[in-house]
Image 1: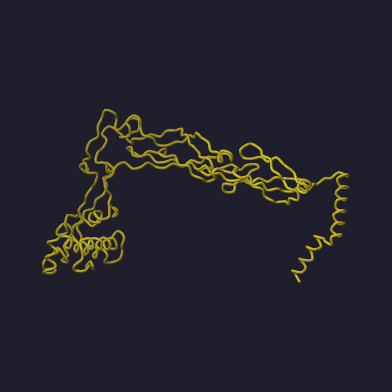
Image 2: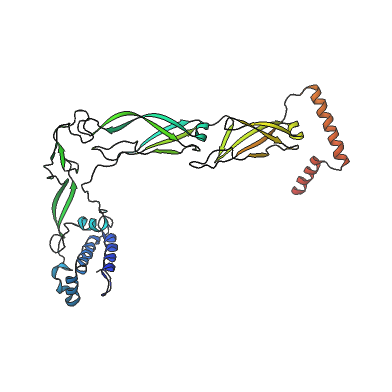
Amino acid sequence: MLGVSRNATDDEVKKTFRQLAKKFHPDTNKEQGAEARFIEINEAYEVLSDPQKRAAYDRYGHAGVGAGAGGGAGFGTDFGNFSSINDLFETFFAGSSGTQRRSGPQRGADLRYELTITFEEAVFGCQKEIELPRWETCANCRGNGAQPGTSTARCTSCQGTGEIRKVQQSIFGQFVNVTMCERCRGEGRVITTPCEKCRGQGRVRNNRRVVVNIPAGVDDGINVRVTGEGEVSARGGTPGNLYVVLTVKPHQYFKRQGNDILYELPISFTQAALGDEVEVPTVDGKSTMLKIPAGTQSSRSFRLKGMGVPVVHSSARGDQHVVVKVVTPTSLSAEQKRLLEEFARLENEQNEHNGKNPFRDSFEKIKDVFQ
C-alpha cells in the first residue's frame, strides 16, 4: 500500500506516508477514490509504525493484524486515536487540513494612508504628523470586553473548549466534524456583563495622531511602514501595521532619475562658443560654479558628483547632471544682426579657404546613402 521495501526504516516509512497522505487527502484531492486510498494509506501506516503490528504483518500478512489493516475498519475502531481524517492529517501536517481550532486573539488589520510630500522632503527626509481613524483597545475594559469588576463565564455551548464536535456516520465509519463555537468565537468563555464603553467588543473607534519618519531618498509610490500603528483586533491581540504610501510633487526645475538629479541649464550662443563659468543651482539650496568650455554643443551633460539624491538608509548619494541647452535668440537689435552677419561672412570665407563646407559635406553624405 505504501510502496516501501520490506526492510525500510521507520524514517523511510514515515516520509513515504507523509507524501502519500498529502497527495490523496480529500481536502486537496477531489478525484474519485482518493478518500478510500487515503484511508488505506493511514491503515497501512498504523500497522508499519507499530513494531509489534509490523512484526506480525511480516510473519502472517494481513491475517496477522486482523481488520486493522486492509480490512476496511472505520475511524474510531482500529484506526488509532484519531477521530477523523482531519484529526490525523492535522497531527502530521500542523493543521493544514483546514480544521478550525481554538486560537488566541488574531492580529489586527493593517492600515493604508496616502501622503503627499515635496521633492525636497523626499530627497532629504522629514517628519510628518498624520491623523487617521482606527480601532483601538478599549481603555475601560483593557480589551477583554467585560465591564470592569465583572468576570467572564465558561461557555455552556462548548463547555469551555471553544469547539463544537458533531459525530457523523458514513460508509467509512464515524467522522467527527470539529467547528469553532459560534457563541464564544472559539475562546471558551463568554461575557456576562459587556463593557459599557465598547459594548463587549474590546475596542473602540478613535482618531489618532501618528508621527511618521520619512527617510531621505524615498521616491514616488514608496510605502513607509510604521510598525504597530494599525488597528487592534477584537479581544486584544497584536495590532497591525500602518503603511504610508508616498506621492512626491514634481519640482519646477529638477527631475529625478533613480538617485541622480537632472537639471537643464540654458546658455547663450556666445557662452557655448566662447566658453564661460556659470552659476548652477543644486537641490541642497546652494549654488555651485560650473565651467563651460569653449565650443560646447547643445545637450552636453556635466556631472556634479555627490550632489544627487541620498540612497535610502545609506551614506551614499547620487550625482547631479547638468544638461546645457543653447538658446537661439528670437529678437536681435540692428547691431547684433550686423555682427552676426559679419561672423557668418568670415566663417564662410574660412571654410572656402580650407576647402570645407560642413553643410555641403553633410548633404553629399546623405545623398550618397540614398544612392
